[in-house]
Length: 203
Image 1 (cartoon, rainbow, N blue to C red):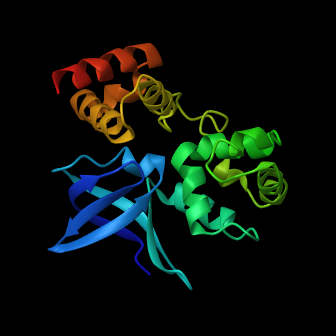
Image 2 (image 1 turned 60 degrees about the vertical axis):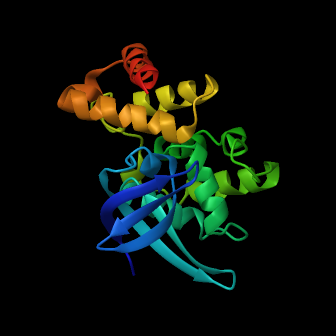
């Protein structure tokens, strides 16, 4: 089982990355969180899960173990495979998923391509009993406000609504994160959006 990969990011698309790991190019279908870690030409480490089915072998990438475990729980539900699970994590953060389940808000899952009302309701129902305390959203568990990158997720969504691609938005946020280091998590959404827009204007 390939549990993680570290290497140079060769390319980033709306849904995937290619990592050069010691001369081998790995194509990885990524969650929104994993994509935010990847900037072309830079090194990145992503948590991974390899799934093999009749359709072939697919390597999925995540920002951390928490996302990976959530993906595995989602894909144990009948009728939901790896592709659908990754579509869900492509538009929703782990915290958004957990909160939707806790509130039985099926409409949240319907934001993912290909997820209809019945599938969304099944997700809420079947995940409700399987999500343990380890999946409690960061702020509800007493973590500092920026610990899980909620502001970055919100700003990423705002940038995409402004017409920027997901990869450009993620790259800009990564540059801001690297420049600010520990102060990144202390920024509010408005300040983070201004910093990201300033970076995008430089490109």
